[in-house]
Amino acid sequence: MSDSSWGASPPLVGQAGYWGSTEGGPVQGAATAGPAYDAPEAQHTRPMPIVPDPPSYGADQDDDRGAARLGGPLFRDDTFQDRPAPAVTQNPEPMPDAPQPPPAPPKKSAGRDLSAAIGVGVGLGVVIVASLFVVKAVFVGVIAVAVVVGLWELTSRLRERKGIKAPLVPLALGGAAMVVAGYVRGAEGAWVAMALTALATLVWRMTEPPEGYLKDVTAGVFAAFYVPFLATFVAMMLTADDGPWRVLTFLLLTVVSDTGAYAVGWRFGKHKLAPRISPGKTREGLLGAVLFAMVAGALCMQFLIDDGTWWQGLLLGLAVAASATLGDLGESMIKRDLGIKDMGTLLPGHGGIMDRLDSLLPTAPVVWLLMVIFVGST
Image (cartoon, rainbow, N blue to C red; front, side, top):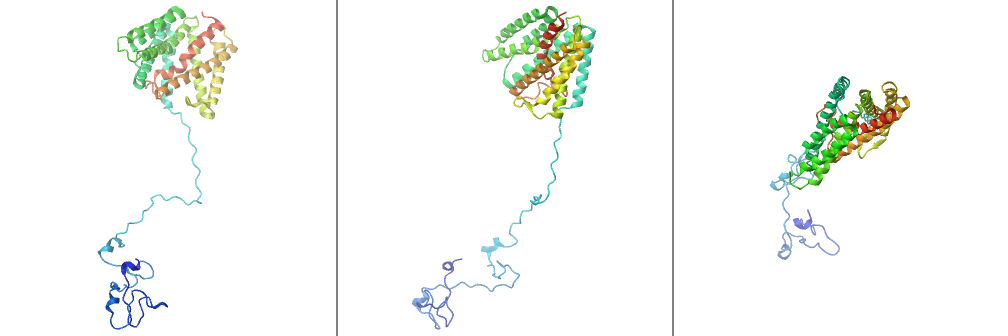
């Protein structure tokens, strides 16, 4: 408190003033010594409030000097009992100089249920191989079913994520017809079926309002080319005398390429291949895909394909590794644009049918063409 707030106290008898005398005279506001105050001077003084005797040490003190704390309701909120308790830190930070344990290295993970992926892959392999070597027409039916399911997944994701209404009915019917036409009439039949499917897509979409017509039919024509037309080359491979072995070589090389990329990339991958498209792919993984596919190609062309040689298999494996990687990156671009991880959930550990066809579809025309160049079409 300042002196002015409380005022000056009357001096004791025999003293010149409250603060003592000065050379210039008595201090302003101090009364003269005597038994009583003069009235004029008393008007300039205010009585000092009565301060209670200080309690003994151990009561409420401001500090160790023993200054008594004023009591009363005005100071009740400042008592010791009402003071907030200091916050207690549950997990105090360690001392700066305390040694810290080294962080545990992150464990690499496959990112999927590996056991489920292997089980589903083996099951699909059994179905494909059994249909491939028993009756060729049955395998053509397997291709057609895969095409229809893939089209359903693709058009569903386009509708959900982008509002694009690619007509599924003409695409599914035309896609299945395209596969059969490729097996029966070859490349000429496949092209005719592709043109008719695109035309049916344009006409079918006319039954709905014109808003969004262009993007809907564009997506429909793209889906017709991307899924059934590329799959038709697998059916055309089957028409050769050693057709089942050509298809088996095509499937083995694609699977081996993907497996080599995964195994080498998971173990040694450090340099990203295309981080903006697929952050999980590495350059080391691509080298693994090329190495595995070339070795598998040399063995398959030498021992499975009529009139095939090992050096042709090396070239075939190199081409398969490149096309399979590009196909995987292409679908990764589609999924990234749609903002999804998988095209579907039909295959546990794999995603959807389209997530397994991404490498196979663009590889099919590459293998068909190189087989025709190396050993002919029959």
